[in-house]
Length: 144
Image (tube, rainbow, N blue to C red):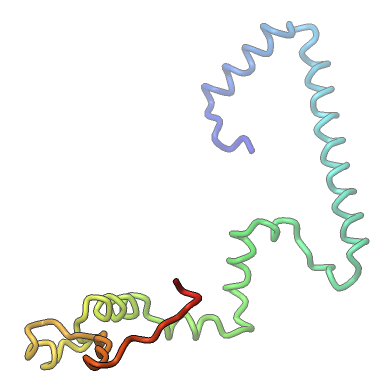
């Protein structure tokens, strides 16, 4: 919690505490603060134990840190019961994205002679056939 406090900041906090509370009351304030922190930790641990008991024996390995989504996902990826590593290794996202981009842009994914013969473009979508001249298009009464 206080891993990023440097020595200069610590000295500043001590001097500030001496100035605010005075040298006479400072030991009493430190005792009160440590007692309060200890009670909060005890309350937290007893609440965790109560929750574990209520969940039952099937959740005896339950850790509250697992509720963090990042920790949960990392733990599930390390546990390879589902074969996720095989799926992840067999899936090449860059290749898939290149194939999709080629299909959208109308290029052949192989870059073969089909794209070269048509000038780099392949018509992927066929145009609908127009009805004969004497035929009328179908009429939908609900659409108008």
